Amino acid sequence: MKIVDVKSYVLESKLKPEQYFTWAQAKVTSRVEALLEIFTDEGVSGIGEAFGFSPMAVKACADHSYKPLLLGENPLDTNRLWDKLYTATRMEGQKGVTVQALSAVDIALWDIKGKIFKTPVANLLGGRYREWVDTYPTGLYRKDVKNQTAALVEEARGYLDKGYRAMKLKIGFGLEDDLGKIAAIRKAIGPQIRLMLDANCAYNASEAIWLGQRAEKFDIFWLEEPIPPEDIQGHLEIKEKIKIMLASGESEFTRYGFRDLISKRAVDIIQPDLCSVGGYSEMMKIIALASTWNIRCIPHVWGTAVGLAANLQLQAAMPHFPTSLNPEQSLIEFDRTPNPLREELVEERFEMDGTKMKIPERPGLGVTLNRKALEKYRIGHP
Ligand code: CA
Image (cartoon, rainbow, N blue to C red):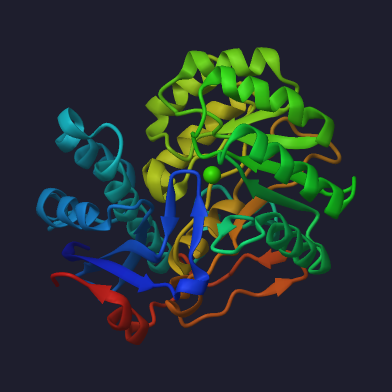
């Protein structure tokens, strides 16, 4: 079997003004994603997704750097092809767009592998720990409204009504401002619900410590990306000074990037993104690395229905470490902001039972691209 073609797609869905939302670094007015498809001479094809906000750059890397190296190759050789592509761009691409594009390639190759062996990707990753995975909503962003606190409280109450037992609040909008919102949300949801905070790298270590110490009384389950990922020493200082678990990793890449976070014990929870760290091949190595330090892995998830499907397969195969009779259960991040690319891009519907999501049992990623939706949202050059 040989790879005969590689196609990449840049998708954009413009949001309506009333759907705009803001995180600590940017206001989101449209959703953009990059997908990639690999075709074989046996008629089987696979689909993958790259996380990130530079999909045109992902496409340029996929089309010009990776495609020529993939044509004629055996798509089942996932580890060897990963090494080949990573090595080809290593000098300029150890982190960032090149690895994100490589992630889409790797996920598409695993989709092909699953279809060839007629089994879900999870079964090829080591088998299934679970058939259902609990979700936690990522929402509680800032919106274009006069009373932010009231809007956040209303949204949080909506998640409560849907039965969620955990939710994540976006912070990073100013220390005192953040504290006010944290207090209001905790008051609204009561003491039983897990509340996480995500600052999207808005602070330095001293500020994060100031905030984290004052947030402790609101029983925060984890504090996510309080500072930029490059500052590993800052992570260690925060861990020393606050009692909230520190989470990070969505801006980190490959086993080499995670080696430093893990081996220095710079975080309590790693959050690698399957569509950004290098795909399944690399993610399984990162998970193995984390398991040797007993550091929890709760992947970051964002993007289209393809990325969600890929993450569900990963979730099935996520091990517990350490093991016990009643271990902390795996959790999948469930973006609740408006995104037609998450709703329309595949033919299948994701089955839910309350807040739990069913892990599909169809071969590969278990999804079929909706070609009409693909054309509807596709932008730029073919
Ligand atoms: Ca985040």
